[in-house]
Amino acid sequence: MFAIIQAAGWPIWPLLLASVIAVALIIERLVALRRNRIVPAGLLQRVLAEYQQKGFGDAQLAELEKNSPLGRVLAAGVRNAKTSREVMKESIEEAGRAVSHDLERYLTTLGTIASISPLMGLFGTIVGMIEIFGSQSPSGANPQQLAHGISIALYNTGFGLVIAIPAMIFWRHFRALVDSLVVDMELQAVRLVEVIQGARK
Image 1 (cartoon, rainbow, N blue to C red):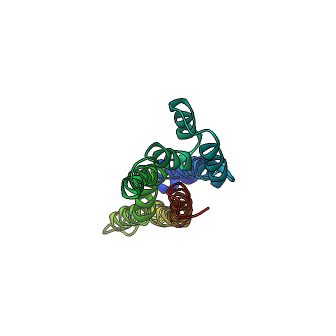
Image 2 (image 1 turned 45 degrees about the horizontal axis):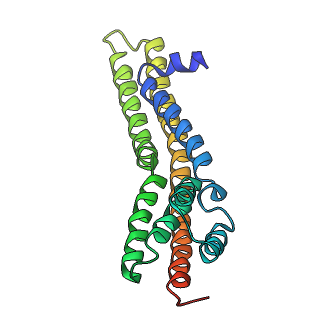
Image 3 (image 1 turned 30 degrees about the horizontal axis):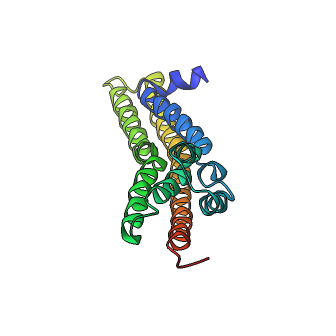
């Protein structure tokens, strides 16, 4: 591995840093965006049952908010249950925007890495080409310098693509997952409003 890094030259170091950051972000998002952590099964039913039986105090609302992102949205609705339908919906939408923003954390960075990695590889290719042209002299080409320039060009291009492809795949996967989770939370929040406001049973 170290021999490959040496052959790829100094342009490989920014790519290595980008790869470490990308792997760390992918692992963090895989852990953070688990569906059962964001939208726990049966939470809405438990909230509605408890609200209809004995209501919610401040302690129970605080506990509900800590439960999960869906809990934060539902707690905002329950806190404003005695207000009008519009106020209740607005409070849920505000909480939903904050939760959605939290779910999208680090995705911009991952998308940026996916976009710039091929460009960083291309920069390494250009450095390699400069090395190749620098190996030319009136007496002929220096084979060692020529080989070094080719290795810089090829390794950096290849490594840039190796980073960009998985990063792009995971970025698109996480974007779709966040959209799905947000829609799920919206549907459950609408159900909460309709049941509490008496439109549904």
